[in-house]
Image: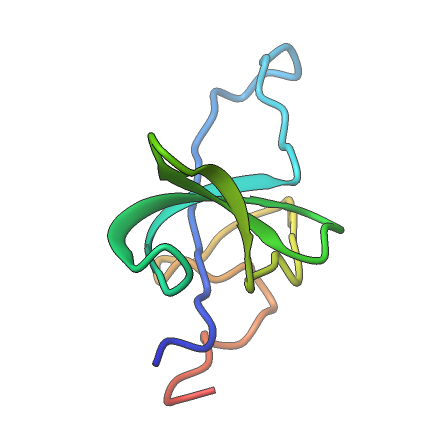
Length: 96
């Protein structure tokens, strides 16, 4: 059973303060839902919410599911070749 997932992304923007890129505390993933028992359901997470929302089926519609966005790090700065922020150690390995 998947208990946690860590999503890391590196985004390169031009060297200008006039970009129109803004972070939001939301995330959508395609996950299997144990409530509606369907695979590949779009699950929407929002920072601070106690639970996520599964897209459900046409008949049932959206429903809550036991998942949450526990942290949202908007680290800014220089990034190493391995995707970690400068001064930050390597990403954790092994089961959590």
